[in-house]
Image 1 (cartoon, rainbow, N blue to C red):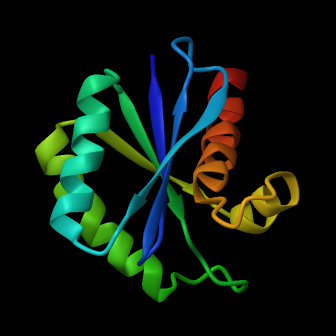
Image 2: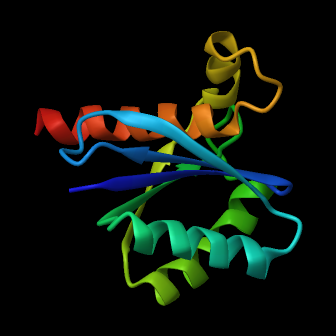
Amino acid sequence: MKYLALDYGSKKIGVAISDEMGMLAFPFKIVLNKNKENSLEEILKIVSENNISTIVVGESLNQKGVENKILEEAKSFVKILEEKSKTKIVFEKEWFSTVEARRYDDRRDADDSAAAIILQRFLDKENRK
């Protein structure tokens, strides 16, 4: 099974993809999110071209565990993505994934690395079952 992860942001969406066995996550791409329709089409293309079975979306919560504004925006984006892709979508908490990604990735934009961290956390849990 191959997985894709999204680190959704209002300006950029980090994308990561797993290996074929669903064991390891790799940064894949940063999608500019200026036009939601274009962003959606680009992600749908990635899903289709890579035979993705499950999409994992970072669940952005504040430090009290309450949904923040970006998660509301992400959920509406994800709803359309799920309808159009016909792909299973799950949420994975993304506690400080961008901060952690920047520790290991010296590029200014580490959104794809943050998506890889989100995906790896999810895969690690799945593979322990």
